[in-house]
Amino acid sequence: MDWIKVESHSDLNKIVEESFQDSNIGVAIFKHSTRCSISSVAKMRLVSFWDFKGELPIYYLDLIAFRDISNLIAEQFNVPHESPQLLIIKDGKCVYNASHLSISVKNIHSELGVKS
Image 1 (tube, rainbow, N blue to C red):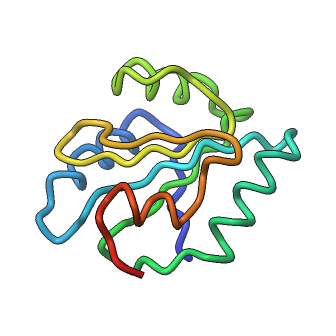
Image 2: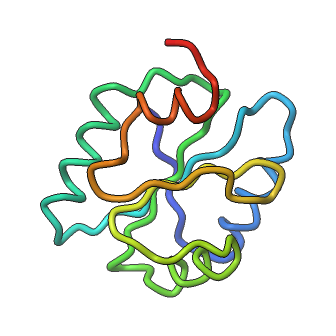
């Protein structure tokens, strides 16, 4: 699993640009709280079962260190902030979001119509 860090507004702009690429089924953003055990469980579940290759790049946001970026994500994609949270961005819009223990690769597959 190749996490791509989100640490700036320009990183968020890159995510939006990447979401328009035909080769991607979307772009994932995982908002992680380094102080939360549920967030650690959600991250571990993603790492353990992630079977996407280049078609679903995944970005990682440490929302303790970059809370302003987390707030910008909530505002830009019109999705209430939660922690942990996974968003799928396609064509510049959030097409899927899950939080806490609803975050799973199986749910992503189901939502995006991807067969495992």
